[in-house]
Length: 497
Image (cartoon, rainbow, N blue to C red; front, side, top):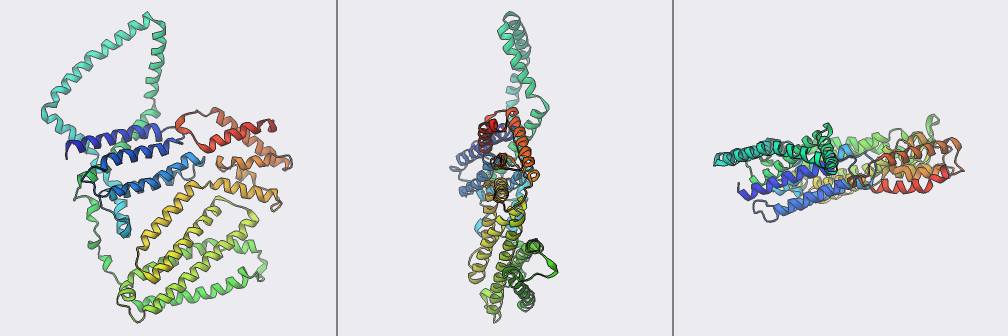
């Protein structure tokens, strides 16, 4: 590898480690999280744009969804998404470096490309030893003489500096006080938590260095290159069109009966058996219907994949019949989604929102989009449906990171309570939500609110206010929601007192 590449790789690894420690491993990272990924983009663009060995610089566009995910730290005070955000960002980084090395094509996405991305998450660990090999190569070139001279200089300097500082501290009290402050900073630097940050940050630097190293080195013996689509025998698997037709017909027969019942009882408001209320009837079976709708999409994909030659190439005489049944299964799945949405709307109109219910609403919207794409795929079959699903899934996840779910929950439930739609409100549940819900909770401090609910809310808000007063005002932790909450608490505290 050229010396220029080595220097750029080393620079990327060192900067990544330092910025990871300073911007990500800080207490309550806020605006610093998106700044970290902006720095990542700038360095990677500088290294890759003029490097002939990097084939697909467009892979850097994967940093856009990563940046949007990082905005969650800046826009929201909720920590609900943090564990999954870490996993998703690692996966997207793996995809990005594969694309930079032209080892991943999102337009031809398949199950083996996904497997390749997962394998690539762990492969950089193998390259952690590379910087030490470079150091060993340097020593072979008589650099050990320079190292010996540096060590002698350090050995002479340390006792001299210690003696000088001691003498100057005795001579000047101001210098002594300033040195004490500096000495305390040194002690703090080597506290346990900071040592932990240095270890984690160093690991992150090595990890990102190794990812980029695998791109620049163009290693053909890597585990990723072993996963070739042509070598996977399952690509040759084909299905029996008669077997699948019988299976789909059986499934559609049961679904048809179910749809009739839905229109009789749920949609048209028929009399329910056993004295069930509509909210209870709506709640039962909701998640089963969502699960079945996902299974239906899976059945459609498996059928179109295993019968692709018979339906779309050879155009077997059963092809039209199979396509019609798949289209009918799409329609049935759409009815299941409508039923699921309607059931949930009946239920939450009686009991309000929770995190799970809001997540399900958002999921149903994106699943409906995926169902429309599946419908088009059955008819035309001229695009990669997995790529569309991946784009829809990523958009769904990005939406969860930029939408303040807790604020939506609080607004809906408080609106129902203040409008008389609900007789009482579960204030204990609302106080378990993140601080995103605080602007809505302030509405429960008005005089017309029931006294117990009002007092609980005021005490909760006072506790949050004290928490903000004790919070360190680091610029890395700047968060729009927290700053908005500070202003709201400050402007309303006189009313509560």
